[in-house]
Image (cartoon, rainbow, N blue to C red):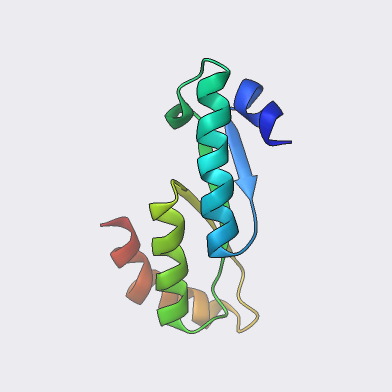
Length: 97
């Protein structure tokens, strides 16, 4: 699928471990360049679980950012709205700065 993304896509949503996401993103860079495209023009998105401890959420977000993912989709936490509000107040400001 990545060769098609490299040639045609404006955005790519991926999933996996921190290591596999970084490896896939690097491969996408290479494939896009071979296809004559600027890899930075392909938006990379991933899901971010808000049900994990905040230090894990922060660490995951940092790994994804470092791997070139600029769009994170926050998964609705099983703990509900209060957990989401806590994320917005305590964690999200650190991620967007």
